[in-house]
Image (cartoon, rainbow over all chains, first blue to last red; front, side):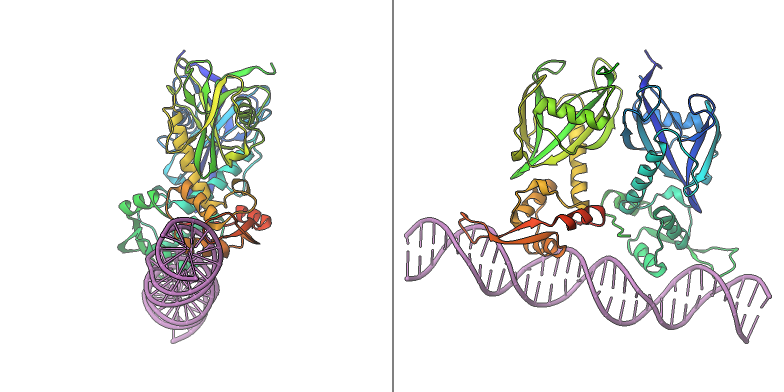
Amino acid sequence: MEQQIMDDLSIDCVIFGFTDELKVLLVKHAEGISKGKWALPGGWITYDESLDQAANRILNLLTGVDNLFLEQLKAFGSVERFPSKRVVTVAYYTLIRDSDYDVVAGFTASDAQWFSINDIPDLPYDHQEILQYAWDQLKHKVKQEPIGFNLLPKKFTLLQLQNLYESILQIKLDKPNFRRKMLGMKLLIDCDEKQDNVSHRAAKLYRFNEEVYQSLKEHKFVLDW
Amino acid sequence: MEQQIMDDLSIDCVIFGFTDELKVLLVKHAEGISKGKWALPGGWITYDESLDQAANRILNLLTGVDNLFLEQLKAFGSVERFPSKRVVTVAYYTLIRDSDYDVVAGFTASDAQWFSINDIPDLPYDHQEILQYAWDQLKHKVKQEPIGFNLLPKKFTLLQLQNLYESILQIKLDKPNFRRKMLGMKLLIDCDEKQDNVSHRAAKLYRFNEEVYQSLKEHKFVLDW
DNA sequence: ACACTTATAGTCTTTTTGACTATTACTTGT
DNA sequence: ACAAGTAATAGTCAAAAAGACTATAAGTGT
C-alpha cells in the first residue's frame, strides 16, 4: 500500500528562476512517452504523501533542488491532455534565485536546465498552457505581495529590485517614482554601503526589513503597475 | 471504460448564494460514510469528462442547479483528509443569486439547502477548510473584478450593490464614498427610474453597463476595501 | 576637463481617498 | 397639516498617492 502510486494523478512543477532575467526550469525526459523532450519537472503521487509533499519530492528527485515553498497553481484535467490514458495533474509553482541552486538531472531525467522565459522550447502535453497559466499567476502575485528575500542578494541596489519587477511583469518603470514608492513603504533598510567595481556612480545598497516584509505579506501591498 | 469513475479523485463545490445575505449551498447525504450530515455537494469524476465538466454534472445531479460558471479553487490532497481510503478532491466555487435557482435534492442527496454563511453546521472531512478557503478566495476576487450581473436584479439601487459588497467582505462602507467610486467608474447606467413601495425617499435604479463590465473584468479594477 | 553613465533629489499637477456635513424627498404617525 | 423618521443624494475639504517630468550629483574612462 505504501509507496504505491496513484496512477491517474500526477504533479507538474513550474520553477521560475531569476538572476538578471526570468527563467524556467525544465528537464529532459530519459524515458517514457516524451523521451528526449524538454518538459516541466513532474511525476506521480504516492498514496502516503500529500500533494504538497509529492511536489517537493518530485522536484528534488529530478533536479536536486530541495526545500522550496511550492505553491499550488491549479489542477489540469481535460480528458485528452495526456495521451494513452486519463491523467489529471496538479501543477505547482514557485520563484527562486536560480544562482542559489545547483541543478542536476536525477532519476528519470537525463538533463535539467534553465531556459529564458522568452526562449522556451516546444513542450509536450499541455505544459505550454500550464506554464502560461503559471506566469500569469506569478505576475498577479508579485503585485499583491512583496517580492521575496530569496530573489536578490542580501544586499542589493534599487535598480536591481526594479529590474526584477520589470522582467517579471515585462514592463518599464519610472526610476524616480519606483524609488519613491519602494522607500516609502519602509520595506528596505539602508545598509550605508555602496556598490563597488562599477564604472559609474555607485548605488546605495539596501536589504529587506524582515518584519515589515512579513506584515506586508499578510496585509496590504498593492502595486498598480 | 467510459462512465467508469476515477475512484481516488473527487470534486467538491462551494456554491455561494446571495440575496440579502451571503449563503452557502449544502446537501445532506442520503448514503455513504457521512450519511445524514450536511456537506458540500461533491462526487466522483468519470474517465470521459474534464474536471470542469465533472463539477457541473455533479452539482446538477445533487441540486438541480445547472449551467453555472464554476471556477476551480484548489486541489485538496492531504493523506488523511478522507477516511477509509486516499482521495484527492478538486474544489470549485461560484457565486450566484440564489433566488434565481430552484434547489432540489437529487440523486444521492436527501436534501439540499442554503445556509447563511454565519450559521454553517458542522461539516465532514476537510469541508470546513475548503469552505473557508473558498470564502477567502471570494473576498479576494470581489476586490479585483466587478461583481457579476447575475447577482442583483436587472435594475438595482446603489444601496443594494453596497450591501452586496458589505456582506461578502463583512465590512461597513461609507455611503457617499461608495457611490462616488461606483459612479466614477462608469460601470452603472442610470435607468431614469426609481424604486417604489418603499417607505422613504426612493432611490434611483441602475443597471450594469455590459461593455464597461467586460473591460473592467479584463483590465484594472481595484477596490482597496 | 569633458563626455558618459547611473544615482538620487526634487517639482508640479492631477487623481484618489477618507471623513465628514448638508440637503432633499418621501412616508408615517399624531 | 405637521413633525419625526429614514434613506438618498450632493457637496466639501484636506491628505495621500500617482505620473510625468527636470535637475543635479557622483562616479568612470579618455
